[in-house]
Length: 70
Image (cartoon, rainbow, N blue to C red; front, side):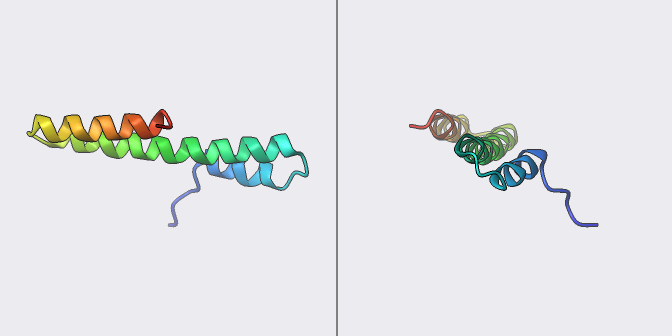
């Protein structure tokens, strides 16, 4: 069974069918937030599975910077 498309991406695709510029901006933001969410999940999984505090700290800082747009 194929993976179901995440709701954020389904909504982004739907918004892209609109001629409205705000809808297209909202679609782009949904995609950006979906990517940030995936990065945060990956970082948390890494941090929860490592015994190296410095590595976990580095990954957390990098992911937070990306989530904050830095």
